[in-house]
Length: 88
Image (cartoon, rainbow, N blue to C red):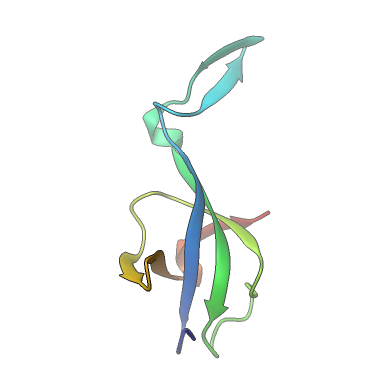
């Protein structure tokens, strides 16, 4: 499967939200604030107009970005470069 134009295809590898992730605050572990929720994902394919992100990169995104779809029993998400928070 190949992304086209300015699209990036990813698969989510880690969902970090207020129920599943913890953060250290003043030396104590606390649940993550919902406003700080993020997901980690692996880049599967990039369109020809994408320059900053490449296949195999691990990225951080907000949970609500992109469009999710399933193909051959794998869940993908199509996003754009502006929806990537960071490459890790």
